[in-house]
Image 1: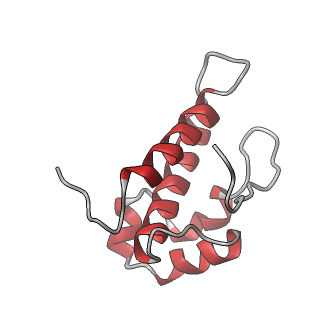
Image 2: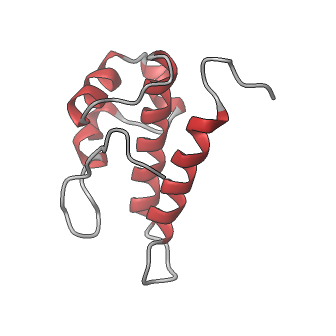
Image 3: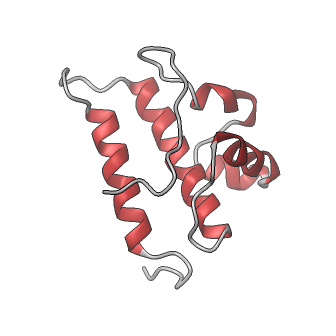
Length: 107
């Protein structure tokens, strides 16, 4: 499977690492299925956003939501997103705090 030159592994690997760390967490060895599904959906949305914006991530949550609303329903389903639950994906299932997107975070 080859990747488009517009979408490099340099972008995908940090996203995958963040997703794995967020799902596994620091304390419990159990993975919350709802948290895992939400983070998988966010990873899919972020990846699609970056792919359609020259490998550049969204500047904030609202830009990512706007992008999700503009996506074809079939594409949304492909990344595991239900538009009716869009706001839920951006809220932590554990502490109910908003999930934020950090631009240019160093890894």
